[in-house]
Amino acid sequence: MAAKTLYDKLWDEHVVREEQDGTSLLYIDRHLVHEVTSPQAFEGLRLAGRQAWRTDTVLATPDHNVPTTDRSQGIEDPVSRIQVETLDQNCVDFGITEFKMDDVRQGIVHVIGPEEGAILPGMTVVCGDSHTSTHGAVGALAFGIGTSEVEHVLATQCLIQKKSKNMLVSVDGPLPAGVTAKDMVLAIIGEIGTAGGTGYAIEFAGQAVRELSVEGRLSLCNMTIEAGARAGMVAVDDKTIDYMRGKPYAPTDEQWDQAVAHWRTLVSDEDAVFDRVVRIDAATIRPQVTWGTSPEMVVSIDNAVPDPAQESDPVKSAGMQAALEYMGLQANTPISEIRPDKVFIGSCTRVATRSRTTSSWRWWCPVPDWSNSRPNRKAWTRSSLTPVSNGVNRVVRCAWR
Image (tube, rainbow, N blue to C red):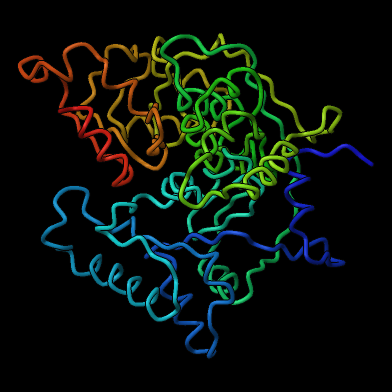
């Protein structure tokens, strides 16, 4: 039997039928739904007189239009309110489980899936959101889909897809102190560009990736889409299995043992062949800063803003100049001399789930004097802290008391 990559294994396990044009009909294990890309899909089902095929595989939550502060007064913006109320009604009408706005389990859709164990290793996962690639961190095949595809999956539990090529990105050696998963993925994008992953599914590997927490891996896979690839993933290991243990949607008892036995096979075979291999020395990665209008416009914190005059490609040079003008920056300015206007902590990219450690937040809490010295905070740039789920919000608030 030919050696397979992790992507090959996940793909092959879910192919229902292969077509002569090179496309395949894939079975979808988990469908995540939010309020932005689902209204037209549900309306399409109504017009066609169809029901959702497997409601037990669908999990919905509002996350784009909900307040990040006080929710006791509801949603003030009328358009946002209509979108959330429409999702609520659609979930009632079609019998779909929803974590509503005030549910303790509600949060960014890419966070609540892993947080609740609704996303498990080996699954195919789709959502009407490009950053669905996040879930590949637990050894799943996950990718974003459009509204018409949302309707198709609701109606049939299947999706027509064309298989991508395989790319391995190996970050070798340990990360330096103070360098995070976000720095790692920005360094990768800086290396291959925002189109470097186009047509590929990326597997992230190497010592630095293995040493990341699951939350760190979620952040890494989340930004696969910024590298041009549709799906990113990390092989299953003991960290993955420990992360899943005891979660509400995870299997239990004998089924847990059976699941773990299968999950441990979700790694690339030793002699598997990749279409492209990118290797990066982790020791060379420093904290990263994006200076322009694209994720590939990135430099390390101890470098300077690039100079368009030094770029030989006239198209790239013009793009760099336009980005500098938009950002109000001068070429060759040391990054360390640029004072932030505001610090925002918390997004679907910096993924922190309600885990035993909530490790993605702990890096921030120990910063000297931030968490226990109000006078000192006034000297710092204004900052906003927005936990990515109600569960994480409770953990962070308890840590700050």
